[in-house]
Length: 154
Image 1 (cartoon, rainbow, N blue to C red):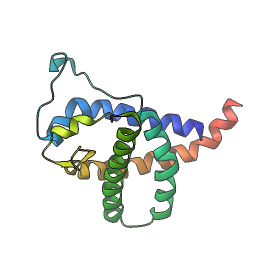
Image 2: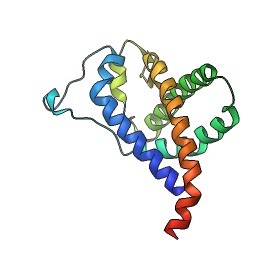
Image 3: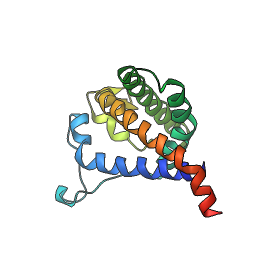
């Protein structure tokens, strides 16, 4: 499980950095002030996202995926879209109330924000659905190889 936690966190953080470079202004519907020239392709991510990605996928996504894996892909797409938006909004709210901010607080500048503080964006729904469908494949692979890695490492 520790291996899968690490892999989920690393992949989630990597995709976040890539998305913050190439897609975030599109889904926000507004420009973000960059500290360096945009040609640097600088991405951004918070260390708070490590447990959110790692534990969220390990404890929530995996069991739900295995429960619904035989369902039609379009239904799973819709479930992932709304589940991830809800999870992002819940995590944003929880972080905001406990540490006083949430790492994606720039969502507040968007006209597509969910809730007054912008804990998530409506425009992320299709992207979260695609991410969920892609993540299903990663979960299958990692769950399959995990027992073999244990025997190699030990």
